[in-house]
Length: 183
Ligand SMILES: [Cu+2]
Image (cartoon, rainbow, N blue to C red):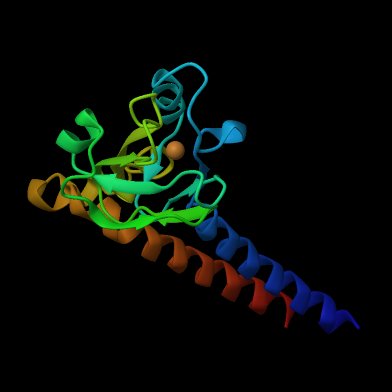
């Protein structure tokens, strides 16, 4: 009975770590409750929405719309500005709701090509950053400074690549302490 409790504690710790990593990926519901539609108040609606979000590689966009009423097409900036589907990136998504994964950093532009929806403001521009620049990890960067002072070139890389490894190491250490304590 007691050993079951111990196992529960260990599994709980492992689960907590996994959840922490999963939580780093965010599904952004485009337009929130308004969904992916012709905005009531023009293009500013999606500009305002995008400004309220932080997009990171690994996140996803969820476009909520009725199939065939709208579509989603990623286009280059020039096409976004002119509401044309020239040089379309990938394929047109016509089935809603649609889940679009953000797999590369930089600016991404999405429009609806149905009727004059884009001209009426159904267009979305977002900027995706690499996961290394998330606020949560950058604030914990100082520790590497002890070794970084002599190797400036390596400084930029070490927080990015080592933070998951450091976390894993910490957890393994914690687990071994817990295991040693209980068993
Ligand atoms: Cu539309």
